[in-house]
Image 1 (cartoon, helix red, strand yellow):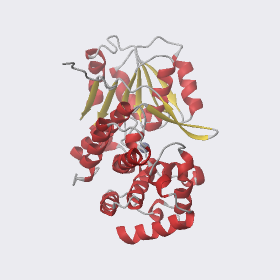
Image 2 (tube, protein in one colour):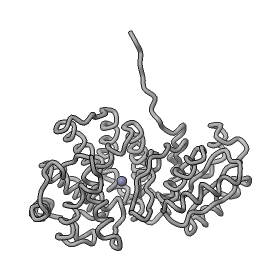
Image 3 (tube, protein in one colour):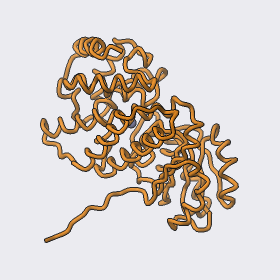
Image 4 (cartoon, helix red, strand yellow):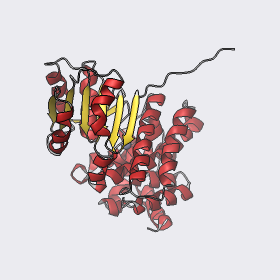
Length: 353
Ligand SMILES: [Zn+2]
């Protein structure tokens, strides 16, 4: 009988603990990523300075780089700068923008990325995607998964609460994204991956059922692990499908239509997930998502996110254009903007937050 198993692209080490950054040199040498400490480290130009003061003495042979923003141009520039030295790996020390720029820059020159997340606003810690801005908007670019994921819970404790809570919306949106994928499987015959859906959904359930909040270390640890599992579910699927459906299409549409008023990505996708679940007829999940979002101080209504009901309906109508070829509840119901406005009104009455 054949014994066949598939290999899952995933980090060789996942470390979620207090003081994890202090162990960084040991983590790098234990896993044969860098035994000499000759690594490049990239951090943000602003808040990265504080962490540099802490990490630089641990890695005395490292060269330091900064990225000013989350643009493709900055990531390309970083990639060029990295060619000036010989490094064992690129350590990314920062939030989503720094990690996304690092994954892209390292991939261009064949370096492995060690992702050290300083907030939990995003699921890019272990995902095979970098979100980068260019002149035509916000792009999702395929990259390699980081070789190590590190989350220092002491650093997360110091991060602005909004940049941690936002990850709650990101993980919760899995529950809607997976339902969209299953809908597409039934309606269009799109192939579905049971392991990817199981992992993405489990990550979402772990957060929706957790009674804690972002100020508590055990909740932060659960959130970090859920974000990492989400990223690996995307590696399994070979796409963002397990974590991105109508929820993300609505968020991308808000980004495109109202770029000056973008809320946090996790805030927008959480709201999108609750509304998409309502559209899908899963009123129980819509209510559960909305109440969990509100409990964590995240928006469950357009008004709470800074948009009018009309603007939200417009974004929901525009949303399918942001991801051509992806079938979600929005493509399935194919409602007019006016009907989406009516559905949004019914959603508001239902969630009652
Ligand atoms: Zn996302």
